[in-house]
Image (cartoon, rainbow, N blue to C red):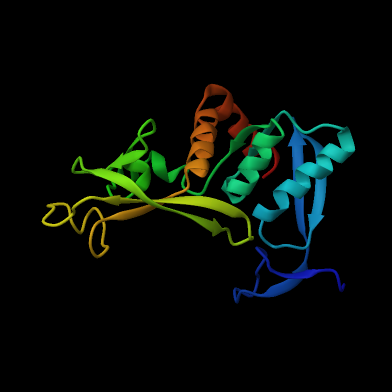
Length: 209
């Protein structure tokens, strides 16, 4: 099949990481009924999401009101697509479950655990020092999707008792932040942890999986 793509299969009976020609099938369900399917020549799920939802729109003349998906689909590009098309997001991101653990919440090296002052645009480091924006730059995802980054830097990390635990950089700590992605994740987190979100997550596991 010249249109198939080599993919690493879950059914690896030889236990040697075989690649086999295959397609990536995406499926949507609603209360045990299949509402849409799409076939892709890409192994990863992330890049299939927009195309899958667009095919849903072509079939029914509208997008779904809500989207529930696992962390394989949680990217800035997909979150922006959901937002643009007014689809309520219940899409996980890569550390959704991990961030609920005590170990994650106590990790002072994580940007997610730093306090952010939105009105004055600065972070507070674990020792209470301001981290101010020093640079804005452009980035691209692995799939080529552009995004904006802001670099924040602490004023003075010398002789800080948390040096080494807080960061392992030379000089004052710097963090790269994608504010738009953080906000999308916050909205998804609120939806996913709501009563409705927990119900939808349970249904997704029992239906699609």
